Image (cartoon, rainbow, N blue to C red; front, side, top):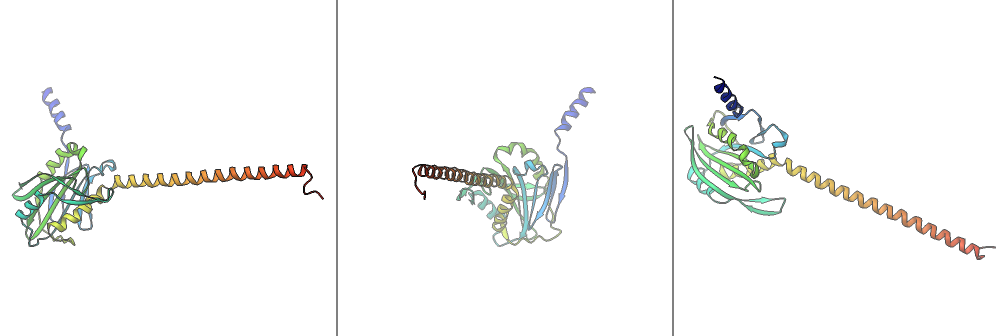
Amino acid sequence: MLLICLLASILSTNVVEAKPFVNSFIEFNLPDSWGCSESGNYWTCQPLDPKKTSEVVIVMAAGPQGPSDNMKDYYDYLSGSMVSYDLKENKKVKSTPTYTQYKDIFGQKWVDSQHLSTAVPDYYTRYLATVKDGRAVLFTVTVEKNKYNIYMSELYKLIESMKMRMSLPAEPLDTGLKGLLFGQKQAIKTALDGKEKKALQIGEAKKSSALWMSLLIALVVFVVVYIYIKRKRKGMSKDKNKKGFFRK
């Protein structure tokens, strides 16, 4: 009996408590330590711990189904590399697809694909795309490469709990998968930019500190030179006075 209780206690410590998340087009079980918010046309979900917000983000959106919004086109498109622009390095970045497959979740067929370095360099992004009732739906999970194993288990459970719902229309500005992908990349970057903002702030602080240090050094040099010249002139005047110059 004691062994059973001990085993139950150990197992319970590994269970991540979840809470239901629901919007107009999807529902799933979200870990208790996460929160979601609506930002423009996109929903984002991240850990509540500020230290972890730059490590992982879920972004989802739905829009009207366009002519090329079908499962085969999704599969073909996500099977290849995607190109994005790295503003920090000022260059184009080509993603590396790790897999693309069809996946069934509660009777809904999805195209499931994972890429490295799409929206953000050195981050894995898992794409799940589908169509239902005249809507194109895109669900993405982006995780820092070095933190992938930490979040893999809870994110797997979250994805396996996804159910489609279309009770209310969702109308992003961009329609179809490619439009959603473009907006999704921007939303991912915005959600993860805490680290980039911090680096930028540190860089600006260093620039400011270096500028003030240069000004201070210039000021000290000016004062030293001014004092030296003043003393030099004073000494010259004394020498001249000793020799009888300027005396009436």
